[in-house]
Image (cartoon, rainbow, N blue to C red; front, side, top):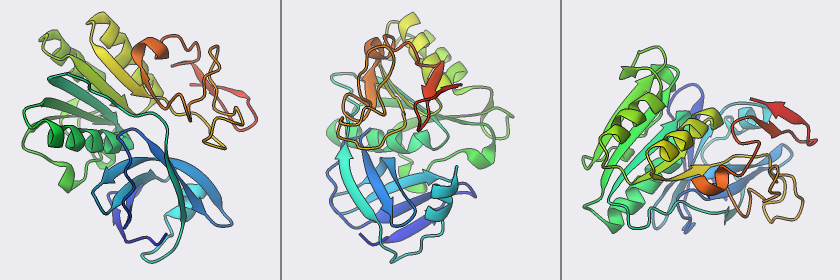
Length: 259
């Protein structure tokens, strides 16, 4: 599948667009195959009836090669796979995105507003610094209330995204949370969801190889459920049964890697 266009958001994050009706749901992922380099899973960050976009952060050798792609270059795409966010009957929702984790949440916000224009959405977007804040211009919607946080205070409020979330939860009107981003941030979001008795879904990233639930690479302790099929989007009740959540994950050889 050829790359239709590429938008560089900053030195670390790009969105790659493809002309194809993917029919993904927010929170699902696809595999992107770069021949002779690697095949990696990426969450769907944007979608219309005829296009979709993958927002990719340069974090290693494979994504470094992907950043060298040009318009017209061809890659392999498989999917979509996995579970998805479901706001159910919620009327007031809060989205908490860390770094480029805000991309699939933007997709969620747009999808839900198309279904229910009266939905109230607070969107918290956090990063370490201003140059790492990610949101595309087309993601801005006057129906959404945005809250920006940075660790160094260079954009929005100085502090953590979860600090801003707790202030919203104290008001008592939020009845659904969705989060995507660093696992330690997501773990704190779940803790706040429990504290304030709010429905919550997370997106739990684990090392994947097959995406069909066959290889067992992405299973989590102690449940043994597979994040490519039973995940990546999980309700907080299930996430809290995963003993490794917020503590460690496993590498390609199954070795434990602490956060």
